[in-house]
Image (cartoon, rainbow, N blue to C red; front, side, top):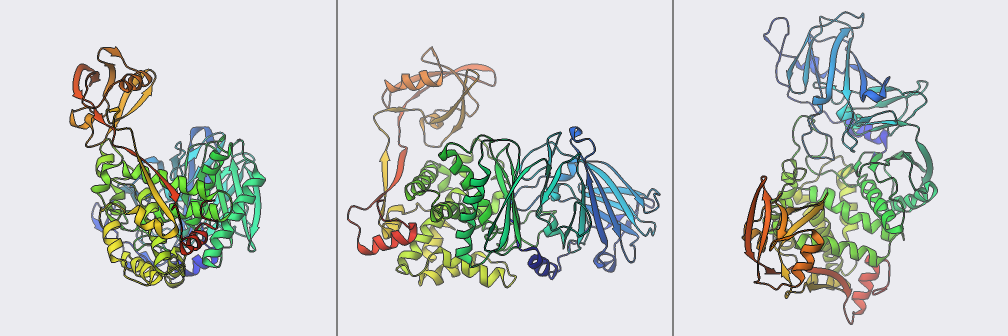
Length: 619
């Protein structure tokens, strides 16, 4: 999700953001050589050329040219270790190979690698430095690179090095596409130079992915701003319908904030893989090529698209405390990912509903399913939303068999708590305010004034909208692990939370199973279940139950004739050793969750529901 680039250039280049780099060593002397502040701060002229002469090798070829008015004795080139929007150290330098550096006349310059992501160059007072390297690119995700004989897709944070201390420096990128491939990115072009693009600083450069291929394209305008879809790959999508539906979503977002804060916007879609990543005036999306039909699957794409698009406002402009300008070499900790991601997950379905692309029943069903998943995670009593946000760097992208018991997702619970906060604001203000007003306040008071907001700022904005203190709400549901009072909160807009317990007379093991290639394996074991209490382990392969060969279908059928407290014997392979596990079956305490209208809604409940959902209560 990209912002108006001219505006971003003015705002971000006005911010001086300099790393404190470790002293470098000269390759020739072996002694520590400090790089002076004046050498670091004087902006060089920086240009990149990215080529792909043999795409089947998966190697992007990068040339980086630097010219200083006064060349420092030593220069350091650094590769980011992560990319904004994906909160995990990914060590992009591991894909770099064949690094070399010369002066402008072609003479080799001495260099050495001084840490995992830094190459130090003895400039020898050259007027120009020309570094060349290749980046192995064979992983199609929205945060990595892929180059093959079908296309090239890359993130600049995973591809382009930056000079130490020069994150505010402008640069240009020229792409030499393979064959007749076309080039798409959110960066503006350089007039008169083919496939050449400019960035005012590295925050913008690293926030501008590239797609190079024989893609299909369609454009549409909303409020005078050009938007376009770049579709890489074949699939069962309807390009015209995608444009029409996306235009409706964009318009609904514009209604919240009163404007579109960019000059143009690009949706880059690769029809393989899955997921999305937000950028200032673009987004990278990956989706199944045949996932656009039927409607239920198409709604999945619309949700993904709406989520990443809303980030153009929430995260890329309304910025949590630590998220921009960025430190590309270390973790950027924040307790606000539940707002950044969970709040955006909340708005993705609201935008679709307001655009008329889904019904209120579909919206509520999706929210109820998310609540059900949360309620079936013992980890909800172990980790708060703020803790989950802060620990994303070490936990969220590294799920293991115990994650269900000690973690929650700041996406899922963040979405739920955002809904509860929105309803609380609406009922407290008698419909005068909503979460829209909170987001609008943050947009105007923080983004437009070039400030990042803190957890205290967010709570204050919510309290201003509600017209009362919300400290109890935030203490319980954001900073704490209290059970959410769903029914008490949604009653304000005429809804009730229906909780239907599973049949407690039926036998229950409590392990999550997966069957693949004839092997029935335990994936996770939730706490306080028979499987947990009697020592079944993640990874156990269930071979038999009471001596009978086990498949998932047979196991479920066999258990259907058993009752809680019956004893069974499971035969499992654990670490390639056969063993028996005897235990008592339990009662299934899981529950199904759904929303329903209250039996006799008041006029206020009807009014608040209609304003929330843009539909009549119960319809």
